Structures are given as structure tokens and as C-alpha cells.
Length: 325
Image (spheres, rainbow, N blue to C red):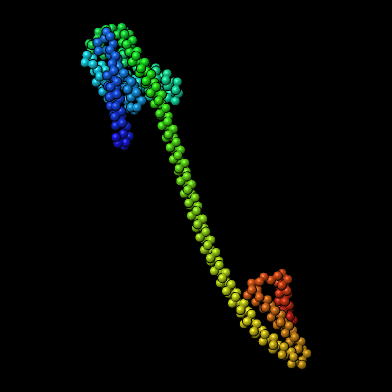
């Protein structure tokens, strides 16, 4: 049977009504004759009808089960009487189930007690009285109501006790089945929630991983750019070191040579004194250029003392220039 078709509530109720009606018909074949009463017989066909109330959500469809169950009515009996007594009884039991039994399904003892009360009322207040009244109205039996009720009630003890036990036990099993179904649905919801949480966590981790990857790529690019910049600056410093050590010192060396030559050939004391100072200053400048070349080409770091000496020499050169002025 198509599951989608069975999920339709109306179709489901119709199918269940037919099934329970057929079960009632089959159990109705097990008959117990009631001595002294024409067309008064006892059977087990009430059990499927009572149980059908637990499954069929729309009470209107119970009439299908009732009509099918009436097929077991003996020839001397009345189909109308059978339909009316079952319809009235099931209408009561359906309301009773939804208003009382359902609300107490969580409590086992109360559920059993209320089920016993409901079945007792089903037989004592609805089934037997409606059967007697309809039979009297149809002229099938002229016995007074009270004697007929008393004798009919006595003859239905076995059917009543059997229905009471079977339906009550079935109700207990039915309620536990509902609980298990509810727990199963709850468990599925919990699993679904946990699965959704895990999926969300995985998405967050993937997103974080993507961000880290992006950041790493960015850092790699930054490092690469900085490395390129440093390489360019290092190349520039290397060129400057070459210029400083060769191109700059060459003119300075010539100045030193010319100064030394003038100092040796000059006879004027003042000129000789100035040439000495110029020669010494050029020598100090040459030392400074050497230190700068060493720093730029070798990458060595000057000590604090060397830095201080370099600073002092520069200051001395500046002071000597001021004295010359």
C-alpha cells in the first residue's frame, strides 16, 4: 500500500474502519446463544469495534465498521437494531476515550480503571438498553424492559468480561506504543538538532579555516613584498658602498696628495700650518668614509664607542671649518 496514500487522514480512517469492521465480522462468527430470547445472541464482535476507537480519529467513519459488523446479524434479528446499538455505544465510547482515557494515558492504574468504567457503561447504559428498545420498537420482542435487561445482562457476562480484559490490555499496550513513538520522535528531533549543530560548527570551522588561509596568503604576500623591498634597498646600499669606497675616496685621495705636496714645498709658515690642518681633516674624512664603506658593504654594526668616535670626528671637522672661516 502506498505510504503517501495512507498518510491522508480520511483515507486512513476509511481503511481502518473497513479492517476493524471485517475483524468484528469474523469474531462475530463466534456466537453464544442466549436461551429464552429470540435473536438475542452473544459474540466477541464488540472487541474490534471498541479497539477501533483508539485508531480512528474521525468518529464519523466508525459507522463503516458498524455497518460491516452488522453483516453477522442473524436472520431473525434486525440489522437496524444492531447498527443503532453499536453506533450509540461507539459514539459514547469515542467521546469517553478522547475526554477521559487520553488525558489519563500516562498513568497506568487510572487508565485501566477508567477503561473498565467506560466499557461497563458501554454495555450497561448503551448497548443493552438500545438493543432492548429497538427490538421492542421493531416488534421482535415484547418482554418488559427490566426483566429483559436483567436476563440479557446475565447472559452477556462472558462477553463483557472478555471485552473488558482484551480492550483494557490493548489500551495499555496502545498507550505504551504511543509513548515509544513520542520518545522516538523526540529522539529524532534531538539527533536532528545535534546534527544541525554539528553542521553549523563544521561550517564555522571551514569559514575560520578559509579566513586563516586568506590571512596566511596575505602574510606570504606581505613577506614577499618586504623581502623584495629589502633586496632593492640592499642593492642600493651596495651601489652606494661602491660609490663611497671608490668614486668618493678617489678625489679625496687626490686632495690628500696635493695637500701633502703643497705642505712640503711651501716655505710660508702660515700656508704650511693651513695645509697641515687641511691634510689632517682630509685624513679624518677618509677614515669616516672607510667606516661608512665597511658598514654599507659588510653590514657590520658599529659599536657604541665607534659611533661616538665617528660623531666626534664629524664635530671636529665642523669646528675646524668654522675656525677657518
